[in-house]
Image (cartoon, rainbow, N blue to C red):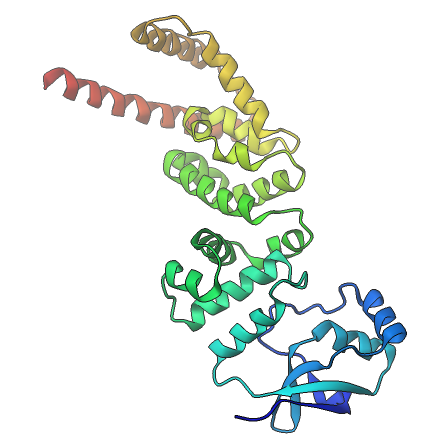
Length: 307
């Protein structure tokens, strides 16, 4: 095996690693520059030699800071070259372990790339390889797969979004598609996703709100539409409205409760009005959805009655 050695070389011969998840090396660059100027180089930048150049495994930000300072020669700790992309990714990740160097987004990108390199192995197998939990593996990979990266990279990197919130939103959107298909058909899942991301960013939606399984089941088409179309409306406010509506039926028998709800729906339908074609379309979709629900319930009751 090639021996590890420390050399001094021209900075122009040192290149960032193309597999490194971090592409912006300017984070805390001024602080890094001060350390180099005041204390010098405590250790070399870890690289392997590839043809006539040195590829960085650890020390990208120090390399960038040296460039900003106009330093021509830098110390390089030359180690043996990785034998595969899998090994290179593994060594890149190991070099960052325990350091506040990669953002949550960059760790998600790294985990996803490790999964691809390992032929999309099971999450359990990858969790053993990376020494982190299966749930972390699953959330990183699914978030990285699901969202357009331009939508989440900056806010995930600066802490506005959390991995947990983005992962829970995926589950929430999937449930919405299954249970409110007409609404999703009208507003499109891309628009709903972007709306929910904005609401998470503005702290109008929390992880706990998204985990409330009854929300999608209990909201009407109109309530969900109002929530999505009102940029300032909190999800918790809609939950409060639902709970307030449900309180009217407390201490009533189940059948009486259902009858009261149907009567109230009938009153609402009779009072419906619209001012333009778009409002008429929205009402028609809502009525068709309600009609389908009623027909399904009728069939279910008939089956139960005849069985």
